Image (cartoon, rainbow, N blue to C red; front, side, top):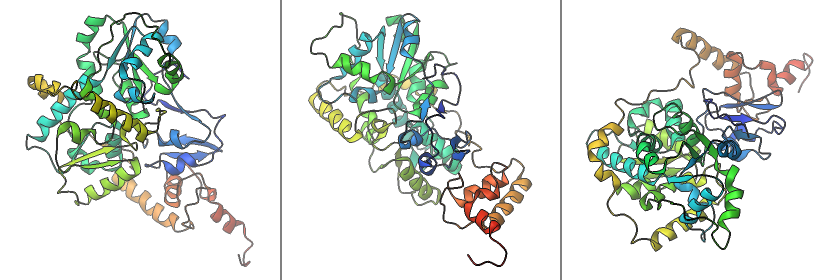
Length: 424
């Protein structure tokens, strides 16, 4: 794995592993992948970091740039920042405290979970929803892949996104207090998905920043070996008790449960989310007060860098919550920070990303659109993908944009090569 976490494009392809099989191209929700010269390529301006390509690849050709454990060990005392998803990848017999101890054992000097930041986020969202300023449906902004999907494909819904900064940004702002208690010199976010990796990467220049990211699957086997030991070999090192209410945010349905809202609509899985967004754009969800959307099936428990079946992981999470019901904090942390809530709200809605524009110049864009309409009529409309584009319309767009040739269509090539007057 590459060790640079400082480039915006974290996803990269191991070309020697790619066979140009089109699995990733076909599953991409924003048509951001093409097959050119037998290898997959990403159109960065369209990618929403959902990680579907990682899941779909049968040869594991897609990877993410992150930091290695060896690099971190050479930097002195480091802190692992754990998404609640991490705690539920080891089966029902491994308690969260044991997982935190395992991170200490493999070389980290301190551990912090995201629970407090998630509870603060929940409190800020609750305050916003009760303010009367929201549009219907209000769309949760917890999943960064969903936020990017709206920016790229559904910009008319940007004002519907709940304008609260992400839990990771909240954690970064409040990191100073934890750092004073634990004195870590570096902090690393253990990421369960590509979108969270990018969100952490975007904070590298921020105050309270994470030093970098570590893909969870890169350290899972080592953690599993330590966590499965019958007797603890951990010295009496301070490990802060996981913030219980924050655990629920790992699973789809967390927002409705944590916020105590009624009548919310839950959808998980990026393609199903896209279908619901289409309905929202058409004005058919005006009666839905809250839309809780997750790019991965099962929420973050189904992220591309998780190892446990998301439904089994959710079962273990819910069982643990029931067993520890008396420990679950009834009072939200967000309530204690009511005066700070204004600082967590965005001053203006997020802006769109120019992922689908044909050209910045409207006149040129209209001319290109006309050319696309004319060109797509020449193609068979069977969307076979043999041309290296996901469908015939996408190929027409690629040809007009200078990224493909009309002859890439095998059907059109055969028609052109057939002797004149000869029947097919």
